[in-house]
Length: 314
Image 1 (cartoon, rainbow, N blue to C red):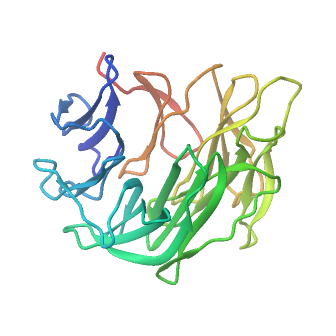
Image 2: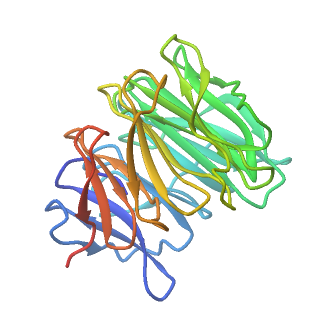
């Protein structure tokens, strides 16, 4: 889901018959309307503002520049086979996509108000598959891209205004990795968790209080139960709160927060067992919204305290 304003929201929703719909609201979620667009295979929707948005999926990248009235396939120099992720900030949009022979993961950037993508010089060899798990985050002038394919493959970041390789090493083999920037780029959260393709491991997050990455344990491995820890999401607020959500081996879900750059994670919100950690969105007024079980979610004004909220009409 994406909220270009507190009143205007867009989301991809799975329906009861297994298809997918693109829905929009212009009254803060009081009512939702279907776009009628064929979005089967779409994996992400994001809007930079009320007019400009993008759909990501196995059918490539589609864009709108008229508040969703029309959507068109977007071309990128060199072609595109599968679009994997998109992020937007400060008047530009970034997309990560698969293309070429051999297949490589590329990144391209365009102004938000028209399609004029320029391919960055950085590229990553595609993993063995079959799991394509690419996430992007952008805030202020910064951006980051994470590529997990069964396990963590590689990463890229915006440094000095350019996409460049980002060397990230989790403290144990075969991890899964997530990052999240705050909306204006004031804070960054980085977390590693077990991928399921190795022994259990702890949930660890980056302690950036000294200006460089030092890993600190958020949740130890094991805890005397079967099953592995599993990362849900990582994000941050512009006030400097880092947030890492995960499920433990016993199925309990936890939202952990840090106010000291990731050095310690004392603030915990424990959710009922088997709670789904779903999609996350930052609202323009600074609140953070996540979905949990169908029809339900949590909202936070500060990333520290969370209140239940309905995410579909009653």
